[in-house]
Structure formats: C-alpha cells, structure tokens
Amino acid sequence: MKKVIIVGAGISGLTAGIYALQSGFDVTIYESHTIPGGASTSWRRKGYLFEGGMHWLTGSSPKTPLNKLWREVGALDDGVHVYNRDPFFEFEYNGQTVGIYRDLDKLRQHFLEISPEDEKEIINLCKDIKKFTKIDMPILDIRGVRVKKMSSVSLSALFGMLPALSRLSFYRNQTAKEFSQRFKSPLLQLFIQEIAGSDNSAIAMAVTIATFVSGDGGYPEGGSLSMANRMAKCFETLGGTIQYGKSVSKVLVQNNIACGVIINGEQIPADAVIVTQDTLVAIDTLFDSPIREPWAEEMRRNTKPVLNTFISIGVEADLSDIPENVTFVPDEPFICGGITESAVQINNYSGYKGYAPKGCSAITSVILGDSYEYWKACKENGTYEAEKQKLAETFIRILARKYPQTDGKVAIWDVATPLTYERYLHSYKGSWMSMMGKGSKMKNYPSKPESIQNVYFAGQRLMGPGGLPAAAGTGRKAAQLLCKDTDTVFQGNI
Ligand SMILES: Cc1cc2nc3c(=O)[nH]c(=O)nc-3n(C[C@H](O)[C@H](O)[C@H](O)COP(=O)(O)OP(=O)(O)OC[C@H]3O[C@@H](n4cnc5c(N)ncnc54)[C@H](O)[C@@H]3O)c2cc1C
Image (cartoon, rainbow, N blue to C red; front, side):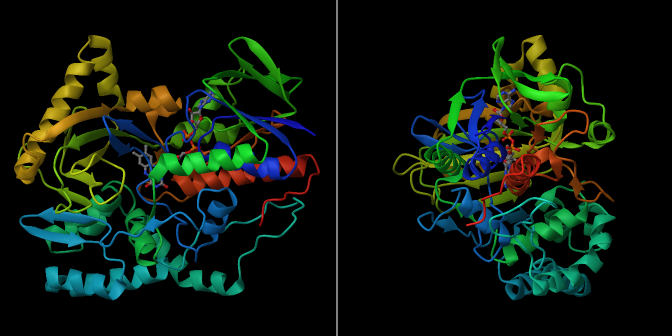
C-alpha cells in the first residue's frame, strides 16, 4: 500500500484524504492547527459559538451534482439539517429594505415594488438569474483515470446550461458597481454592489442570487466546524490518521521526485505528497527552490486575494427580531483597517440552537477588504490590540444605535484580522478565496507541477474564485491524479 502524506486538514485536505483512503492508500494528514477545517471553522467563547467560515454551502441542495460529493466525504448526510434562510440576505437603506428571496417570481415582484421605474432592467436581470440557476459545478473524472463508477453530466443538464453561457460575458465584462448603474433606484444600486462586492465582476452577483433561487446555498446545522469534524471522522473511520499541531516546513524532493516532508527537522518518508496549504504560498515556501512554472508565475501575477476582518460579539439579549443577515449604512464613519466601509453587515445566529446561552445571541460581521498592510503596521508599531478594541467599540456603538436592544448588553467581543487568518492558515495575506474582477474568467490551475513528480496540489486557490466547492473539487481531483499516476482504481463514487 502506498503511503501518502497530506499537508493540511482543511476541506480540500480532508476531501483528498477520504478519496485516497477509499482507493486503498495509506494516508496521514499533518495539520499545523489543533483542529480540522482550516478556513472553515468556528470557535466558542464564554458559551457563544461564533461561525467563522461558511455562510452558505453550494451543493447543500440534493438536486446538485456537488451534493453527492459532500455526502461521499461525510460533510452532509440525512441526519444533518440544512437551513435555507429566506430571504437569504437583506439590505437596508433610507428606511427601505431589499432582500434576496428564493422564489424568483416573488423576487421580481419585490424588486418591482421597490422600483417600478427599473422594470426593464429588473425583468432582464430575473430572466438571466433563471438561466444561471441551470449552471452547476460538474463533478467529472479526470482524463485517463480508472474509476469504479463513472461520474458524468447528463445531456439534458448540458443543454440546460446553454442559455446561461450566452449571457456570461455580459456580466463578466463589468463590475457589479458598473452593472448597478443601469438601475435608477439607489437602493437597488447599493444592494447589487453589496451582494458579492462592488469591484467583483457582476457575474459573481448574478450567480450568487441564482444559487439561492435554485434552492441551493443552505447552511448545514452546526456550521463549519461541525462539518469539518464530520469529514475528519469519516477520514479516521476509513483508517486515516490526522496529526495535529504538526507544521510541515518542506516537501522532501530527491531527483525531482517528492519523497516525504520535513516537520520540526524530522524527515518523514512518503510515496506521494498532497499539498493543501494555499498554493500561492506553498510554491514559494514548501520546496527548496520556488516553483517557477508558467502557471505558478501566472498565479503570482494575477491573484487578487479575498480577505477580511471578522468581528464577533455575544449579546445578553434575544435578538430574534433582528434579520438573520442584514447590511445597513452606518450613521457614523465605520473605518476598518484604514478602509472606510460604505455599509455594515451582520449575521445574527439567535435563531440557531446552541450558538449562545439561553436568551442571548451571537452576532458576527465579515468586513471584506485588503487591510493586511494596515494591521501588519499596527502589529509592528504596537497599536494592534488597541486598534482591534477601537474597531469593536465602534461596531458595538453603531449596532446599539441601529438596534437599541443591544445597548449595554455586549458580554464579549472578539476581532480576527487578516493576520489572525494568516497565522492559522499560512495563506497569502490570510486570504481564503480570490477575487474575480471585471473580465476575468473562472480559473483552473494545474494540480501538479511538471518539474516534480509525486506531488499534488489541492485547495481553493487552484479553482478561482475558490470557496468550499473549489476546495472539495480540487481535493477530489488530486486523489484522482494520484490514482492515475499509480494505476489505481479511484473508488470514490458511491
Ligand atoms: C469569514 C469566511 C467566510 C467564508 N464563507 C464561505 C461561504 O459562505 N461559502 C464558501 O463556499 N466558502 C466560504 N469561505 C471560504 C472557505 O472557507 C475556504 O475557501 C475553504 O475552507 C478553503 O479550504 P482549503 O482546504 O482550500 O484551505 P484551508 O482552509 O486554508 O486549509 C488549509 C489547511 O492547511 C493547514 N496548513 C497550512 N499550511 C500548513 C503546513 N505547512 N503544515 C501543516 N498544515 C498546514 C491550515 O492550518 C489549514 O487547516 C469563507 C471563509 C471565511 C474565512
């Protein structure tokens, strides 16, 4: 039995490990943190559970091909309840609220009520959303791999996607902000910009809405860490080992063949190594010399990382009267990491069991933006902790004016900066996805270098824009490449 080492027990590492074990390999994962999940994580403080990763899971719907993959790796099963929040996202501005409803007719009507003068644009957008609901991430087998059971896309699914393909370039070639200018209503304009980021291409916004409208994008009970724990259990039940608190410093390579890893100066032999640390960092740090192949240079040149600062607070009040996911314009400047935010976003977990002590509520806020250098400078000049506190206090003050029921009730706050994510994930600037700017297409980087044999890559960075589906998809692909190179039958499909 061939021995495989996987670097990292995030979603891609666990996925690769599960498929490799099922296919007969002897697999050990080395994970630098003390828990599985990587960016897909949550943490407890004083009885509050703060969801720090997944806000929605593409593939949570049994109708999607990805759902089968999530079930194969134990992320989902019949016992896991999936919350399909409706409306999924709400945006408030000037006393008006707009949301993403999961029923397309209701959504169209809702937009029309908000802005009858935008009728033409609303109807066109909703028509396109309907087309985009037919786009699913296909789960395919790589060319040349022997599989126990083939994974295929039906002809009707392929034909169903055709109308969407003709509309992709329209959305891809403009930012969400540019697209929003087609609408007269300032509320709809800001809403469109907030859904997936104003500088992202408009395709991200349209596909995000389509995900919810198609009945997908639910939140599995227990969230990120529970999902990671289920996958880790599935991996261990199949006979795999996870060694926590072990940071891989180098992949051992002899005569251009990977033959193990180095941890704390100790050489650990293996027949193959799957690297799931952020590929953008791994290609520069995990090998004796950086990987300089054209795809690696392109990744270095073109990656626009998605990173965030994360605020979580525990409130000693039942906030079930506040929407579950709402974004609003603050009444005082909200500056995070040197960037003035146009809006404040909150996730309210008061409706979820086990997220807070009785009668209390867990609230989180994801503040997207590249504030890495700002926080790094704070760390260096000794103001890091004070800046985090200032940010939390501003957030709590803004929240108390918006929702007076939170005033004076905050029992605990916590701020994670891009430096926190970098420390835990060893990813580029602490990022966990890549931006798809105007004109950019979905990116697929190779899962193995040409210059070194028996080493494979997996993880969000390989399949832009990334996220959980990319992590799982590339993990499965790495396991298939491993099977192909060793003439092993891939056993994955159940
Ligand atoms: C706030 C937030 C919200 C998000 N929301 C969503 C969402 O709603 N939907 C969605 O699809 N995605 C979401 N994501 C993104 C998603 O969580 C990530 O894209 C995904 O988890 C990445 O998985 P990965 O396995 O590629 O990488 P990672 O999660 O980064 O896993 C890599 C693992 O490798 C370990 N590691 C790194 N280097 C080493 C080393 N040298 N030695 C040993 N171990 C090492 C790390 O500790 C980590 O556990 C969100 C992320 C965040 C942070």
